[in-house]
Image (cartoon, rainbow, N blue to C red; front, side):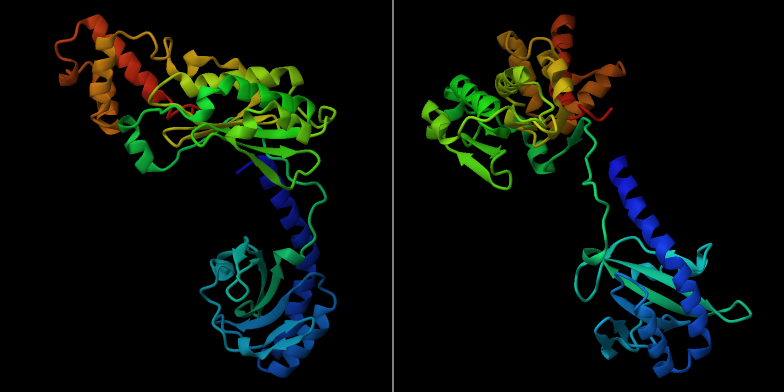
Length: 383
């Protein structure tokens, strides 16, 4: 999990702990002599509810985790919960082994409302220290106060592998020119213009479907789909009024064209592993890429600009290979990803590789380099 996100979650839990625990300790002591008297217990819980802000339900369980009161709410009681066995609920797991008699659960989905919830459990002990029951305090996450500052996700290069079935058939596909591909230069120029001068802060090119999706500073809650005809008509700029470059932008305006130039190159650099979609967000400075292997990358723009095609595909990008080398690479790729990885591993270990038999040392090395370049795209960003 993003460390900043984890920090904010921990902060929220600390607030609840510090606010609630002193009250549940006192309430458990008041409940202890009343465990055999349902009416008296519910009366105590109803009074306690007034001093527990944001609490959704209060209830008491016996030592076997069976509920011996109704659910107490701010608007009355829920007697249908009396007798309910809560021993299997997530907030009861390991409660008896905890160092403290108070435990605040991690968030879970409630059984009845199907909403994210938290439960605090306070042990009720006899004077001799034996567990006599449990006091339960339920919270609905919707009703809890939250930190004022919105979580700001960590900006780092991350990779997500996609559908294994697509990855497994990678070498059985090749790029087919789309309408967008046929006029990609003017389309990119138009998108750069919209992002530089017309208030578009997020733009995404969908190469295969010849579409783009954009988000504007004037209406950030809605995205707009631009079809091929719109993307090839400069008059589209008349529909989006000129705006100052966003003050929140972290991407320098002069870098937008350079970023989309690399996105364009990744589309055409290889016929097997090629870009299906690429986007840029000016405000968080992230570039997103989705490749034909269904792998996705999310990259800070400055790191993206620092990498050239050699990083992604190898020195020659598959464009200047001889016909024989290309034929051998294609032949081996047709064997599937698993076998290609085995061939690379066997070669690295000095073991004979039947698929390379008959090739010269130079050709064999060139084929292996090409295979490594192709397979390396899966692992980018994992090290």
